[in-house]
Amino acid sequence: MLLAVGFLLALFLCAGRAFAAPSPMDAFVAEVVRNNPSLSARALTRAAVVREASAAGLWPDPFGAVMLDNVPEREGGGMPMIRYQVSQMVPWPGKLGLMRDAVTRRADRAQADTEARRLELVLDASRAYLMLALNARRRGINRASTGLLDIVQRASIARYGAGVGEHHDVSRAQVERNALDLALIDLEGERSAIVAMMNALRNRSSEDAIADPAPSKGDVPALPPRRDLEALAIAQRPELKRMRAMQREENAMASLARRERYPDIMTSVWYNQVLGAPDSAGMMLGATLPVFGVRRQNRLAGAADLRSQSVDRDVEAMRAMIRFEIADASRKVSTAGKTLAFLRDVAQKRAEDSFQSAIAGYSAGTLAIVGVLDAWRSLLAVELARAEATVMQSMAWAELERAVGARVGASVR
Image 1: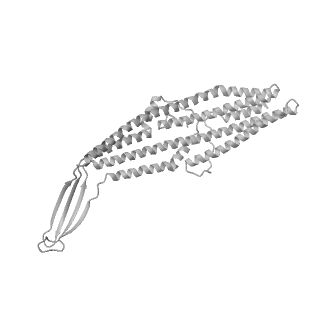
Image 2 (image 1 turned 90 degrees about the vertical axis):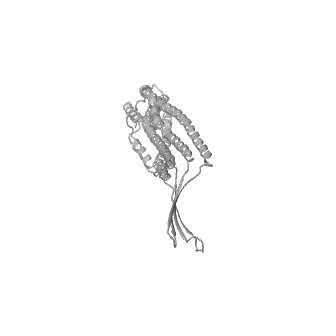
Image 3 (image 1 turned 180 degrees about the vertical axis):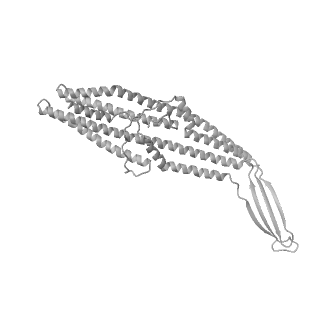
């Protein structure tokens, strides 16, 4: 019996070995990024703004007119005439460029929104995949633990048959087995919900099958220095890029408002077709008079300047939040690593030794079944804690990369 216990104990522990997110995780994340419609919607929004920016820099259409004059001909009046006239408004130099620049900055904001959504999808997909991995680990531990309880139950039946045990021992082992069966039902239901969520992320039917992640060994890279992570985040976070684009847009709008104080030029050329007399031609050059609009444009420019200054404050607040997010994610990664080291090097070995000693003592009749079940629960708790801590470490690393806005060092995947 001890040989069988040792074999099943090895299976039990194998179900809970250190797990870093398996390499198929990257493939799943890439599929989510590729197929999720919310990301393509933002990409289309950006494309629309880029198209709008290309239109903002175009000249206004010319104006054409045909005029008939002195019809019908009267004695003493002018000769009948047909005038063909074309007029063109010429904006003051730089106005069209500033209009186009302001809309282009909106395209930069849309691009930053697209990148922010991509990072959120990467984080959501990573979390969902890791939740499935944790669920698979818990089910594996459940099955291995069921095998151990079967051995305990057979031992209690043998002791009861030999007249050295009590029927109560058999019942206690069966109760624990029933609890494991109920837990497995709950885990199977949880798996269905996780799979449905993962399929929703990749825009597929909720019933599409997804295989359980296969545990694989992997080393979590060492955390880079905090200031390096913060510097990378300042350069990469799309939220900051969006704010910078917004500030450039406000600066462009302020410059455009100040440029609007300058007059636009109106030019016209015409050709007179005179019936019964020589034809003639002419031209005109005019300009708008910036009489009433100067104060209005000055105030609009001042408002844009204030909005630009407010963005500076938002950027400062965002940087403070980024520093916190990086510190919090780094703490989670570090804490999970220390927890794993303790469980692996101290708690797990003690729990294994305690369970094996309990089994031996129960077989020899020196320990009650309550002691065996207590030792089994302790071993189960350690393995579940190790499984959770390992996956939490991977999730924390995914959160760290979201906080930075880019991949950090070697991937835990």
